[in-house]
Image (cartoon, rainbow, N blue to C red; front, side, top):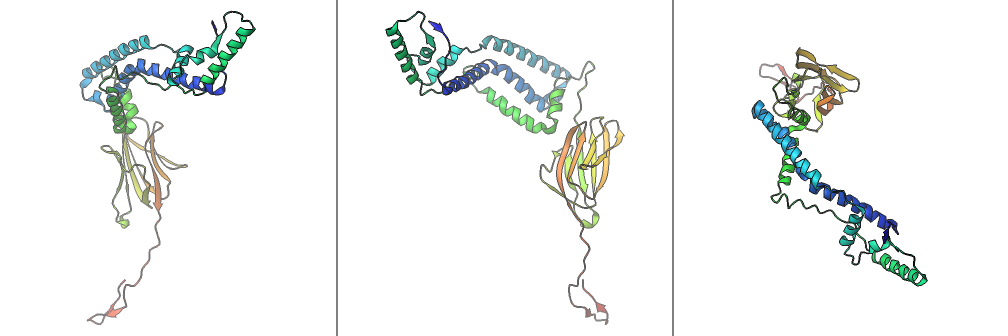
Length: 320
C-alpha cells in the first residue's frame, strides 16, 4: 500500500510534534551524553583553577587528555546518533498510548489498487474504527537509556561538581575557563583575573567602623543587600590584575576613573555626599555592584539632662 501522512485533527498533529521533540532529545542524549560530560568536567575543573595547581606541563597534559577524550566520545556519539523518522514517531505514540493493531498507520494507509463500491464501504469502515482508536493518544515521553552506559551515575557527580565550581569561581568563572585553554609556555600567558578591594570609611564623628564591601581574599562580601552609608563617608578602592582603566559609578552622571599606580594596579578615594549605587567596572565588566542608601547628617541638637544646681563651691552646674 502507498503511504501518505494525513492527520485528522489538531490534537493528533500536536501529539506528533511533541513526540518528535521527545524522541529527538532521547536519541541526542543517548548518543552525546559522553562528550557533553567530558566537556562539563573540563569546565568544572577550570572553575576550580586546577590548571594553576598542576604546573605548566601538567596543564598541557590535562588539555591533551581532555581533547583526546572529547574527540573519542564525539566520534562514538556521531556513529550512535540516528535521526528519527516519521515512522518512529508514529510507533512511539502507539506504544505510549497502549494501542493495538497500529491505528495511526491505518489512518495513513491508502488502497494500492482501485476498489469497487463494496470495497470502498469496507475501507471507510476500517478508517472509522482507526479514528475511534486514536481518541486517547498521548505523546511519547523520552526515556534515554543512559544508565546502561553510566551505571554508577557519574553524570550526576559531574553536574554537581560543575555547579559547585561555578559558584566558587563567581565573577572569575569566565576568566578561569579561558585560562584553562592557555598553558603558560611557548609564549602563552594566562590572563589574570581582576581583583577588587573596596571599603567605606564613615566620618570620624559617627564612631562607626569601616564597611568592607569586597576584598581580594573573600571577593564580594556584602552580597546584594542595600548598604547604608553615612553622608561624607570616604570610599577607598583598589583594583589589580589587569591593565584596563577601571571606573567607579555612584549615579548615572557620577562616574570617576581610578588613578593608575602601576600598569595593572589602580586606586581611588572619593567622598560620598549622594549616591544610588556603588559600581566598579573594568573593560566593560562589573567587578562589584551594590545598592546604597545615604544616611543624611542631621542638624546638631543640645538639651538639658537635669535642672541647673549649685555645687559645694557655690558654682553653677549645668548638665546637658
